[in-house]
Length: 281
Length: 295
Image 1: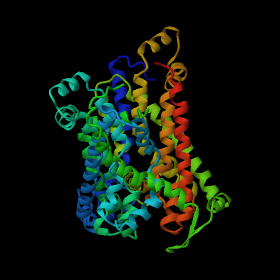
Image 2: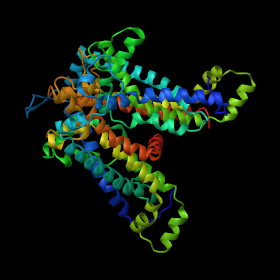
Image 3: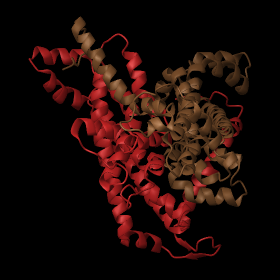
Image 4: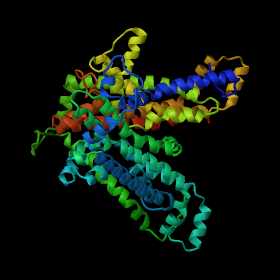
């Protein structure tokens, strides 16, 4: 049994703990590890019994086939673009609205703040039917704007920017005002340079949210050339009648690589971003 | 509270808020209100005519055994996903809370599945569980000499989407359990040890009760996750089958709208889900913060 109070251990206990952690890590990563392994195996090896855990030799054919099968070049570019636009939109709008709530007094402030937070209760899934009708009626169906517009504002980003701006000492603001610094200059020259870590965390989380989005792109985009990465995964399944696991896994791995890169580069911010989302009150 | 800081710029805050509110009103509030409106109408597939039917769509839904079964199945799905997910996550969080060199490296590994999309999670698990080339069946065969038809048997398909959902959400739960565990002061454990409590007693009588606010928060968040975010997993792994065994609320709603083209019924289902979210949220705000055992 592990000590619950994080004491220090003898060398044997340490080795045992590392062993346990390595085994569990392997189990947690098993779907990804086997996915990569199969993506590098030729068809004959994949369908031989017993299944191999490692490829005989590295075989990249599946990657080329998957890439061409669902035009991954277009799809990945579409996804990167959409994720960037959504990330920038959420950050931009979140900074502006968060600043309004942190540094200004105005009529109906409490009500408006509540109205922003209330949208946390309106997930895409409960709006999708009328939203689809609305976007189609205004002629934005199957378009990039129709895809990204509904994602451009987020209660979480507004809320977290407000919380962050409130922590910046008041004395800074007072001296800035005395020096005749207007509200916009104050935001861009003083507040934002003090917000790097928060912006980075929100950028990572918001980028991944759009990169991983599936339901809305599935509904609004029909054109194969305009589809996003997660739809690519579905297309891999749909386009091979007899499941060619090597190709499907190769495509899946290519879709997940950007997620993993962004996550590993910024995991500190990511975890912080997730953890602070918990503090909704 | 904040003082009047930029008093002379009375229009500025509204200017700052307007882009956010335009998006929220057009794409969040308006469709939500419209869900309620649409749910009161009947609309022929592809037809432009809407006929006002009042609450008939709701009445039909609640008299439809398929929908009631769907709600029941979704409830089971949520209960199993949450209980299995939270138990595993708590155990893993305890292990990850050890004072060990390199522990941060393991933590990063355990968070990875949470960053992955539900479609990718579904795709990886479909492969692992497929009876021909997947390794899970091979290992089960080696260890217990059994072959499981994961995605063609109703019970195992249901289990399969639970496994994939638990795997995907574990990272989120671990982050919060870890934070909760680290907030428990070592002195609590030390005094329990002096009183002669064993590790299991300490875990059962101290750790779990002190973690209850975290657990409560995670239950609420996991209800929302497993109801809404499982769409991609179901769509990739089973498309609701076999024989509707993995058809859960959000997938049924999608099919109603985009396969059966019945916007009225689909909208009524959205409103029911919306009511669920609001109830869960109110529950959270009402009981969530009072439950804190430590400060």
